[in-house]
Length: 203
Image 1 (cartoon, rainbow, N blue to C red):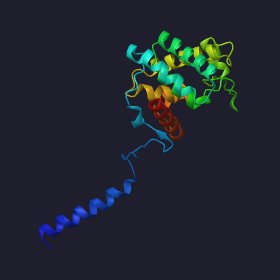
Image 2: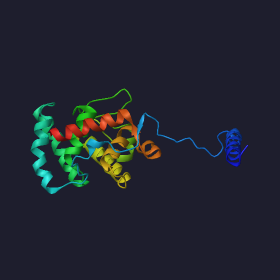
Image 3: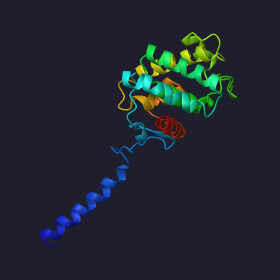
Image 4: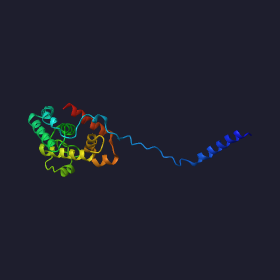
């Protein structure tokens, strides 16, 4: 047996014995669970400024009111619009974003109640009412104030995220602690965000 053949046999034997060590040193690649999305939902990158812009303000009033008239009587539409405009300006939030959120949550029904006990225009839970100072969740003005204040908090909570608005909306649906803990949100929440963004662009 020549030297070359001997080297080949030796390498073959070493390769076989080295495989007996199992998976030591091997780490299985981890991937996020399929039910979550770790990246911001693409459609939320659609010129939604979380801050209130003066040029959006009064120009937005008529478009918001006209949109709400498609779901509520004129008197309620005016009252809802007035509250949205007042508190959006007070808390520096785009009023069209609040209107789109309310449309998705309650269809602008001030008396809406969900199976989980969420109430009014923004479908506020009792705990959210308490934290935002809402005492009459079925009152248009009080519920709007709470909805806007809560969104302001969520936008601040996720201000360091690349897609602040999407994560704030995810926090509105799932709860901010759950979204922050997993750094993402469920697939059904992505659809919820998409719905709100699409409504936003219809207003």
